[in-house]
Amino acid sequence: MSDAQKNQSNRTPHVPSAEHERAEQGGANDQSIQKVHAILLREKPEPSEGFSPMPLFLLGLISAVIFVVSVYVVHYRGDFDPLVYDHRYDAVAAKAAASAPKELTPEQILASGKRLYQTCAACHQASGLGVSGVYPPLAASEWVTGSEERLIRVLLHGLNGPIQVKGNTYNGAMPAFGKVQGGGYNWSDEKVAHVLSYIRHEWGNNAAFITKEKVSDVLKANASRTKPWTQEELKPFE
Ligand code: HEC
Image 1: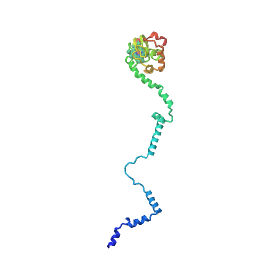
Image 2: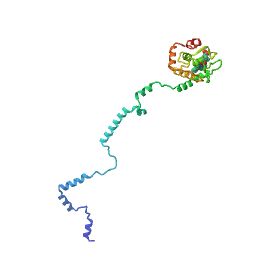
Image 3: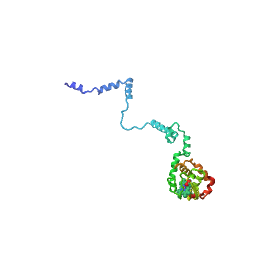
């Protein structure tokens, strides 16, 4: 290869010679400048690694969305009650139902009465047959299945002195169970109603339930009473 040839190939075409550069600068006209600018404008900055700060606009948008959603949730949260999403749900009725006393079913009343009867069973026995000569029977007793007024009085204030049950005479002391002065048990009117409803339905007995309202009425009528009843005193309520 000749020297001239070597020179030729060493010269890369991208590196213009000094003369060439001068020639280009000299030949710069409006068109070529615009062209160069167009190329520069087209260029985007190189993508770089690392975090770039969140645009203020996006930050504002997200904050606004969070704010609006918070206001919405506070207004429509429905106390986070799952029933709120039931289309039949009536918030007013639900509140009234929640504050109203729950009505027990007859089964629940009898179950409650049965539990309470454990206290009575100490004397009257689980069989309701009592103890001959000492504790009178409740099964098939006319005191139990008869007058509500008399039965409630016996439970609230107790019973003393000789009494006849199913033709037999007893003479013991039946304690007072109601909320009365000197009573050791102080059962609520509801408890009294439950246990009485139970003994009127157990051992083949079949008399109507006794309501707590009825018990309350009888208790009010005897508010000043402090001692147990006698069979004589209860005659008017038979
Ligand atoms: C400490 C034992 C004792 C307990 C506890 C007791 N009783 Fe009596 N009960 C008696 C006695 C004694 C008599 C009879 C009273 C008399 O001779 O004057 C009686 C009488 C009765 C009578 C009227 C007579 C009859 O047999 O029908 C009823 C009703 C009665 N009790 C129900 C109950 C109920 C209900 C309970 C539980 C809540 C209860 N008793 C708890 C001792 C008890």
